[in-house]
Image (cartoon, rainbow, N blue to C red; front, side, top):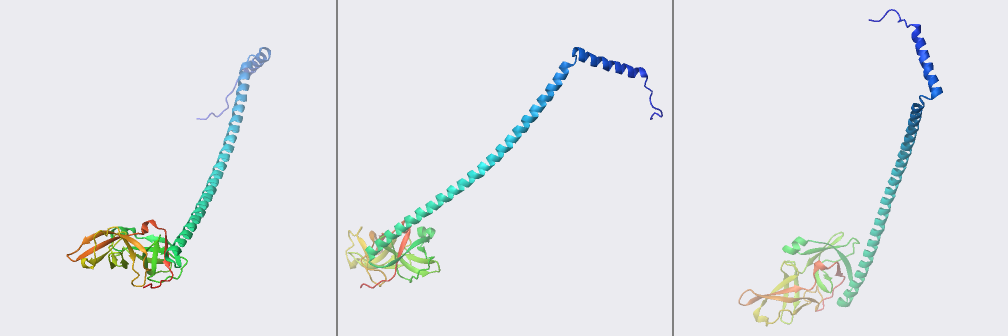
Amino acid sequence: MARSTPTYTPVRNYAIGFLLSAFILFSDIRYETFANIRAFVHASTLYSQMISRGLSENIGITLVSFQENKNLFRENKELKEQILKIKTQDFIERKDYKEKIQIIDFYQTAIGVFKNDVDIFKIASLDLTNYLCCSSHRIYLDNTSQVQIDKNVPVFAGSSFIGQTKNIYTNFIEVILFSDINHLLPIKSNAFYCDARGIGKPMLISCKASKNNGSFENVIGDTVFTSGLGGVFFKDIEIGSISGINSLSIDEIEVVITLKANPLEETFYGVMKKVHDEI
C-alpha cells in the first residue's frame, strides 16, 4: 500500500554525507588517494578507444581488400574468357586452314587420277551401326552450299571409287557404298569379269562366277578394277583386291573382294561432275 505522506530524512544524514564527500575530496587532493583508480579508468578509456579505432581500421581494410579481391576475381574471369575466345578462334582458323590444304591436295589427286572435274564435299554423317552390322551402307555428304549434283554419279575417296550418289536432299547428298547389298559394280581382273554386289560387311563385295569361265587358282591378292560396263564408272580404276574364294557348288564359286577405300578413314569425298562411257 502506497504511503500517503513523504518520508522525513533527518538533517544530520545530509550533514554526514556532505562531510564524507568533503573528506574524500580533500584526501584525493592532498594525498592522491584515488589516483590509481583514476589512472585505471583513464587507461581503460584509452585502450577502449584504441581497440575501437583498430577494429574500425581493420574492418575498413578488410572491406577494401574484399572489394579488391572481388574486382580481381572478375577481371581474372574476364581475362580467362578472352583467352578462351582467342584460343577457340585460333583453333578454328588453324582447322580451316588445314582443311583448305586437304581440299586442295584432294582435288589435285582427283584431277591426276580421274582426269575429270569434280565437286568436293565433307562427310556429314555415317550410320555406323548399320555399316558395322547390317546390310544398308550409306553415308551423307554436307551440301549446305546446295551444289547441283546428279543422281547415280560416281563418288570417290582417296584415290579410288567408293560408291555413287543415291538421293539428293536440300543440304545433303546420300551416297550408297559398294558394300551395300543393293549395289552392283561391274568389275574385272585378270581371271574374270562380273557384277559384284555388296555383302553387307565393311569394305567387302563379292560376285559369283562359274568355275568353267577361267582358272581361279592363285588369284588371292590379284588387283580388281572397274570394267567400265554400264557407263557409270570409268574403267581401269583400281577398287580393291581378291581376298577370298568360296565354293558355292560344284560349278560355282564366290569371289570376295576387299575394297581399297575405307569410308571410316576419309573426311572428304569427290563427286564426278560428268562421266563418259569409255566402252
